[in-house]
Image (tube, rainbow, N blue to C red; front, side, top):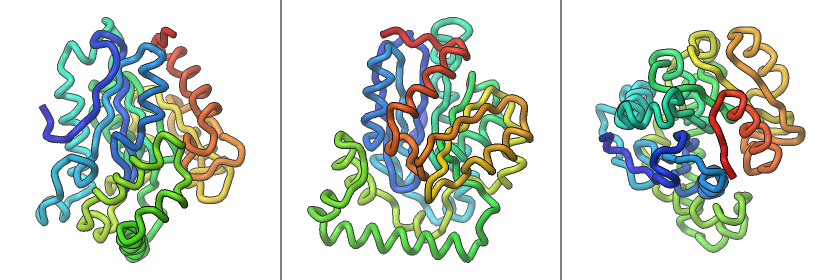
Length: 269
């Protein structure tokens, strides 16, 4: 089994969803998503990425190749589900649902190891190649400063949080558990150009983005991506920024659940 920490919930033999958070998140900061899909009769495996939550920290050697380590970690998680986990019920493999960093990682694995998943849901993925290395390092330093400021004023951080009610406290905890070494590196996704990652996906994919401030993909980006891979469908949630699910949970779940049902992932109430 992979060394990454995770939350596992739902019936053992139900179709499996593997949930991946973004930078500074954790499995527990996906509490609302876990509740939603377990409530629909699905099995959920929510993973703490390396350097997040209760998963191992980053070594200096791993930081040097952080993007590839993210990919290797997800492959190990999916392989660790075993044949039973990939075919429970028969013919239905796990669907990987990722946000930002998690979505970008899932996108790369969907190209390299499509045998490990039945499909992938990408919530406004991080797009490698849209920012320079210097910009990424600067943004990472800003995240580290924000993490330190939250640590100095935890009560204020809770009050200012824009997370869903059940995820406010887990979200602040997750930010404090993020490995500063990863933040300082500026790495937020595998170092695979986003066009290549989209083109190489070998499984059905749903991309959910918004048209609001902060959205990484947006309507225009989604149009370009859909033209690169016929397996990719897209949904734009009006007004949503980068945190699509948190901005409009009902619209997000409606879009994803409908796609899962078309994929053959039964969601029993």
